[in-house]
Length: 297
Image 1 (cartoon, rainbow, N blue to C red):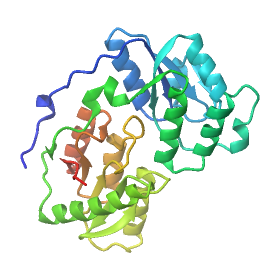
Image 2 (image 1 turned 60 degrees about the vertical axis):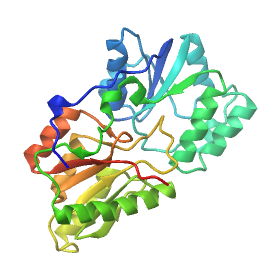
Image 3 (image 1 turned 45 degrees about the vertical axis):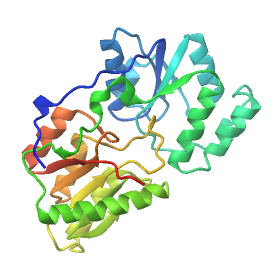
């Protein structure tokens, strides 16, 4: 594969999205990237911060703040501000208790029942149910990548100066199989392989915590070999309008701390947050970043 320059990277045209858009914002940089993308298109986004999740910078710019279970309150806010589209952006670290949603005025019974049942599901099942519930009130849910399509990982290739060697390729292949397997079970989106053997799988704790486990294993000499690769890919049944796998500068930094040689992600179905900064960080750390095509079947 040939290396690609981030300067030459094509920027796809965003699709036409009419009407005002609300961003239901969790943690991380994605919500503000979506908000900025909308403003660049001459639109006025409405930022709804999720209590206990949104970052301080977003809280300073929020238009409203709600609990993740305030379905009725959310619908009232969307209607009051003439919202047509909704984007779910950012991470959610904590799952709320069922009982918190059982408040008078928290939505019609049918939608509330669907909403409550969703909290028993895995992440993808939960997101599908939440999206269906929001859309049942007449709003259109769109993906963050539909607002800022240039955050999607580009077509298959190597994005950094460093390329994976033969061992790196073997690690990518092993971790890719594992990541797809746990994705099919709606568990996680990432895996790490070292020496051609899978040593860590992503669970509900997320990618950074998995990489910390790898670093701890190295420190404890449970992993003797140097190198290794992190692979992230969408789940086979992924709801692409929310929770696409993502990497960014912090991913690169944590992969370097874990002693890995590089990162491979699925093209077109992974977000690279802060693209130029992420590639620059990988080049500075001597890591490769490669993208690969979605496999059929």
